[in-house]
Length: 246
Image 1 (tube, rainbow, N blue to C red):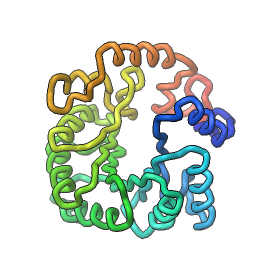
Image 2: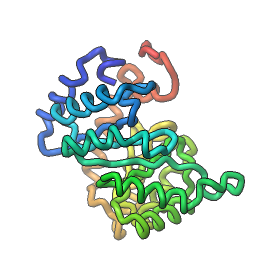
Image 3: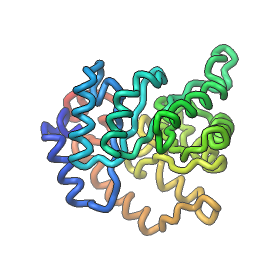
């Protein structure tokens, strides 16, 4: 984002972030052999990128492969291990209950989770990029992964279908350890579910995150002020809006 849209040095942006929040962990998405691009790179390029990212300030590396191919993730995973970064390895979700796609059953996901754990994962990521995971599926899948794999589970989804908040609440009931959400003004659509709604839905329950209404209101106010600037939220919905490059 810093390089492509803002024409900034991404390493300097990362150093600036680290300077301003030294006690908060930073994370990045690493597309295995694709690095942060959209093509396969030589192993030494991926390894050097991980080295530079770790030295500049990235703490958590979220490694995934679009085809759930663990072998294609190994170079990136090993590079993160060498740099002693926190490894969150992701498995991508397909429709769990679709009888026409019986390959992607619970055994498939449990086996992959076990393979990722054996490869050195600290955290198992459940990545639902299209927002298709339904609440009942989330409850069953996360329960099985918790029982059979035993790693902390971080659930990432998008609100494309409009059902992300319901799925997150079901995941919480099943014992998920972390979820991703977006500040209210930037939530919905192809973004994540609304953080304020999730906080309120879990208030005074066993999964209450402990965030106060005042803090949530401050986040909403800040986000509402930032959203109109160059159409930052709308950039996720289409190219070139309000003068932003595609």
